[in-house]
Length: 135
Image (cartoon, rainbow, N blue to C red; front, side):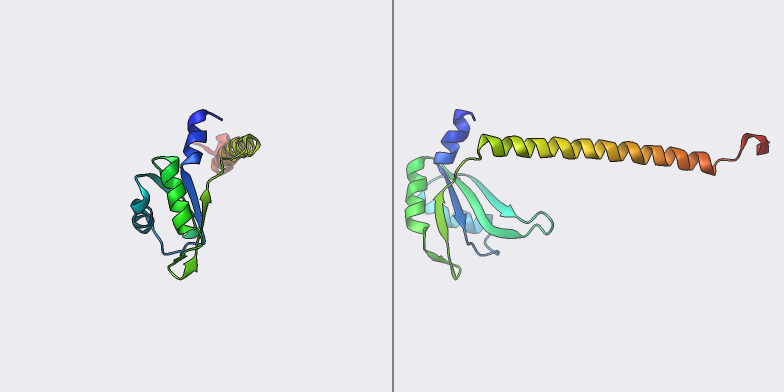
């Protein structure tokens, strides 16, 4: 992993048990009192695009992230007790497994695409008239 990714993790706060209605603006107002926010990533369910109640908030520096964690961890927000801690970077093995799955999926998609093209070509052949019936 490069050093910039590691530096980002030192200033990134992982916050969980959030209300599903809490959006970027809500997180921005929650964290802006602790310093400059560089990035906000809300984790969503891919199928429904609904929040999973977790987010990563990257602050400008580690001290701002630490202040946010101290203030927010265990605090009642929107009727829920939130948990805040420093984000831990993905292990290299996890990243490589994710990349392998993506490559495999891409390969599967190209296989499916090839098979569909063959099917369409065969269908076209079946639907065409034999040469001796053409005028």
